[in-house]
Length: 270
Image 1 (cartoon, rainbow, N blue to C red):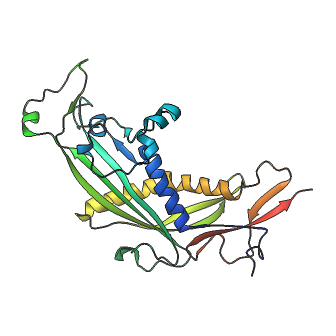
Image 2: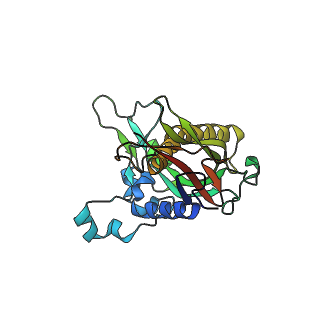
Image 3: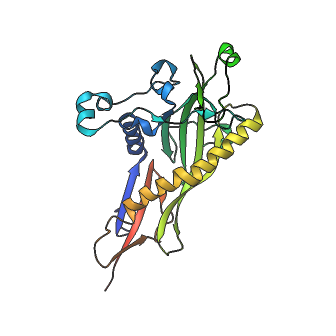
C-alpha cells in the first residue's frame, strides 16, 4: 500500500531524527539549555554538569564572524526572601538530556508510575535536568549586612554549589484540533508525568505540578507550532490551495513504527 492511498500528502518524522536534532542544538546553542548567574557561568568549577559544545561556539574565528554564542543565559541571582531583593544567591540550571520515544517504545524505560509498556498511539519523553544553589559559608553569613536605601544589592559568594539531578518522564499523545479561527492545528497533550525517586512525596507532587504546567503551557505549544508549520503551512503562499487533515485513516496523526505520521488532504479552490 502506498503512503498516499488515503491522502494527497504524507509526512513522517522518525524519533532518531528528532533526537539527533536536539543533540545538535544542545551543542551548538548551549545558552538555550543552560542558565546561571554571572559568577557561576564564569567559573567552570561551579557548574553542576558537563556541557558539550560544538567547536564553533568558542572558536574565535566563528565568534568574530558570526557574533558571540554564549554557553549560558545569564540570570539574576535568586533573591533571599524577606530582603526585598537586596541579597541574592548564585545558582545554575542545566537541561542535560532530552529524548523522545514513539510507540512501540524501544528507547526509554518508563517508571512504574506511568504504567509501562508505552500505549499505542503514544509517545514518551525523558528530560534530565541538573542544577545547584551556591550556599554561602558560615563566615560569610556571619558578616553579611543587608543593604538598605539606595545601596546596591549584594550577591553571596559561592565556593561551590550544592548540585542535584532529576529525571523527568512524560507520556502523551498528539491530536489534530480546530481553533476558534477554524484553522486546524496539531496539539500535543500530556497524559502522565513523573519525576523519578524524589522525596518527600509533597515536594515531588509540587515539582511535578509546576513542571506539568510548564510543559503544557510553554514547551508543548511551541513544539506544536513548529510541527504545524511543517505540515499545514508547507504550501503556504500558493494561491487557491487549502490543506486539511485526512479523515480516511484510523489515526491522524499516527504515532507508530517509531515515527510521527501525518496524512494531509489538498483542496484546490476554484
